[in-house]
Amino acid sequence: MSDDSAQFSGTMEVRERLKFDVASLEAYLKQNVDGFKGPLEVAQFKGGQSNPSYMLTTPNRKYVLRRKPPGKLLPSAHAVDREYRVMTALANTEVPVPKTFCLCEDEDVIGTMFYVMEFLDGDIEWDPSLPNYSKANRVAVFDSMNAAMASLHMVDYKAVGLESFGKPTEYLARQISRWTKQYKASETETIEAMDNLMAWLPDNIPPGDETAIVHGDYRLDNTVLNKNTHRVMGILDWELATLGHPLADFSYHCMTWRLEPELFRGLNGLDLPALGIPTEEQYVASYCERTGRDGIENWDFYSAYNMFRLAAILQGIVGRVKDGTASNKNAADVAVRVKPLAIRGWEQAEKIIKGA
Image 1 (spheres, rainbow, N blue to C red):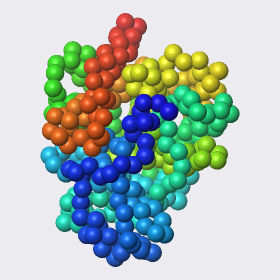
Image 2: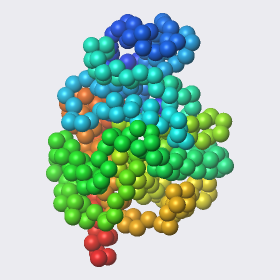
Image 3: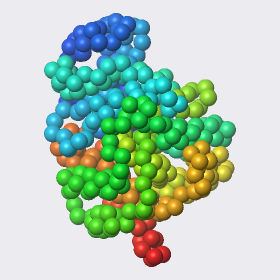
Image 4: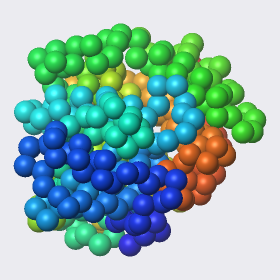
């Protein structure tokens, strides 16, 4: 088991700052979730940097609750209502998502907005090298991750009622602007590479625009794997989902191949053929085949953009640590990766600049 697995897997007693009135929640669920019967026990999942997640256990079944954290929050962050909406909309598609039961916008119930979904009894893996898996099972995991993302990007967002889920154009420009603002709102030190990226990215967006439902944070540890087939049975953590450019979404997922294990749960430097894990080129080719593409241009730009974006996301964790609102006790350890990610992102941009 990797260090991240030990830190983030499983449940624990609810942290003091994130406790709520369990009796109030139980009363609400009895009225709003078909078949719900108490008594109710609550534990907190160790994972989750942004929206605290809880295991709800009753004599008959288990549920998962996701809520906004209490305290001062960044603008537009912690959008649990958007998570609920997109998972509910995808329920009858080929995209594997947990079943949703209710969204509660009444903050009087437990103190913040929340939703409840089914608990998927599968495996969540944090180390993409999957050290405890056989070669054949690693093949199944990566093939199913690829298929799930391709399925998501092929969904007709209008047909599933998500036409108003986001703006259908200029996703990259808006994301660069958004994460620049979020980064500056949480900034705790000057990082030259981030300043360079924030200046360079807006003026170098590739031509052409596409629109699909994008997850925004698709990686191995945001999926639940079937314990028998080892294929993705559910995609979690839809907080950053919106309408956007599918290649920006896919290239974020593919950063796994460009980052080292110690930097951010990456695969760079490992013997992938020996592990049964596809190379980046093979993985991209599979996605292209599934989505009807001949290939992907401007791959280095998307990589630079996503390293900037991930650095900005992690900087938000730095800000929450400082404010005392980080939902994961190990958030400070993750936050130190901001500067190395920014440097790596600027290195990707410099490849484009030097090649121009």
